[in-house]
Amino acid sequence: MPVSDPAAIHETPILIVGGGPVGLGLAADLGWRGVDCLLIEQGDGTIYHPRANTVNSRTMEFCRRWGIAKEVRESGAPPDFPPTIVYATSLAGYELARIERPTHGGHRPLPTTPERSQRCNQIWFDPILRRLAESHSSARLRYNVRFESFAPVTDGVITTVTDLASGRREHIAARYLIDCSGGHAGIGKTLGIRQEGRPVLSYHLNIFLKIKELWNQHDKGKAAFYFFIDKGGDYGSLIEIDGNELWRIGVHGPEYRDEPSEEQIRSVIARCFGKAIPYEIISARRWVCRDLVADRFQAPPIFLAGDSVHQHAPSGGFGMNTGMGDAVDLGWKLAAAVAGWGGPGLLASYEAERRPVAQRNVGEATDNVMRSTDPALIEKIELPTPGGDAARKQIGKDIIENRAKTFISDGIALGYRYESPIVIPDGTPPPPDSVMEYHQTSRPGSRAPHAWLAEGRSTIDLFGKGFVLMRFGADAPNPAGLVVAARERGVPLEVVNVGNPAIAELYEQPLVLVRPDGHVAWRSAAAPGDPLAIIDRVRGA
Ligand SMILES: Cc1cc2nc3c(=O)[nH]c(=O)nc-3n(C[C@H](O)[C@H](O)[C@H](O)COP(=O)(O)OP(=O)(O)OC[C@H]3O[C@@H](n4cnc5c(N)ncnc54)[C@H](O)[C@@H]3O)c2cc1C
Image (cartoon, rainbow, N blue to C red):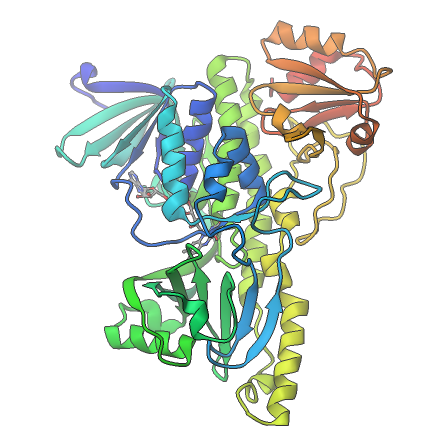
């Protein structure tokens, strides 16, 4: 790339394009690690319309690590707001089913995690991440700066950006470029990366509303979600945003391909409510539901994360959470590469670890959105007759049997695991991959289990900055070989001795090596014969 004035080139080791939750999460993680990075975002950071609500328990664990879990918990609905799902023909119509979510919301820890899933909309979540990132001096965030193009150079890329306030073009030289633009910056396209799947599953309209004490104006009680099915089939949803007066209606259909009229918007609201309820419209926005996973997540030194490489139906609330997993997988690997102890295979393992997770989550999200109701029952859904009662009862039964996993997905949140060249398998078979249930295991590749070491202190609080070698019981093998090998390679490693036999049992082996992202890299009953080989493998050498 011809740059006439080399002085006009700014430098950063890591340039992040896009300040949505994934870019912000990555900047926050790098900042927390003390790694220099620059994030550019074309907008000013204001969020006008609420998208993601569900911050799942794994993302909450990342927030715990970064010190913002309390703020996230306290930013959505009050802790006693029921996370309940109600299915009905409309707010004033027949109730069809009710799904309770025992692992969602509130503060009480679960046996498998200190952090329950929360409902904290991006209108609060993104600014919390932004404040976190900005609190670290090594993370710089520039708003109103648009990425335009990049050109590869020997030791990285040189990008061209526009400062939208001044209109000035600038160049930024970076060793690594991370696309967190939701795919909008066109970086993947330039690299020839293909999005596989269906670019259009359905057209949607979201209406953001203010309604005072809605729960006093119908008979379904307080709930986090109301889903509506009438004789036209599944037609919409109403979602609590702040547990007070903010709500979002969502409807779908080919008619929402085009901008809706005000009359159309009001008729959607009337159908969902089924009776006159006063409301104020804040905004209405169309969006397209997709089912896409990129065929590549990287073309080093460029890596792509979040919606840039996977776009989900929002059913299940997986999209942003999957992207946060990408950010955390990249964070420690980028830090290791910049620090010099990460081998070439470390960053290269990103795609092998994250693409299968994206495929699993996108597939599940699409399955969720495809579930529909038996047309023979739908015909009778609104009949005020015994036949109508019987149809509604059957529909309710089907919903509970087939749709609960849309809303209870602890296995999706916590049970994903990595099989990659930097994870050392121990020959044990993988546990069943369940959407709804999560069973803790220290099998290599899995999230290392949670147990309380002391009041308020979880095993997962040990993980984050470097590797941790967990050593269980007084008779556990001597870790000295691994400690010396890590020191020789400059890999940060801490040994933690745990005497509690219940935790030793949970961790299954007396030596368990946990990566900075909290996933198990290696475990064994004996000290390794060649500790350098273990350290080299897990650092991607
Ligand atoms: C209705 C709805 C409900 C949802 N609910 C959930 C949920 O409950 N849970 C969940 O996990 N997910 C949910 N999602 C999905 C979630 O919103 C997305 O997965 C998430 O926002 C993706 O984050 P991202 O940072 O990858 O991309 P984005 O949020 O799209 O952010 C990308 C950023 O990049 C910026 N950008 C783009 N181009 C450029 C450029 N050239 N230069 C500089 N900046 C640029 C954009 O301005 C934007 O700020 C929902 C989505 C929708 C539509």
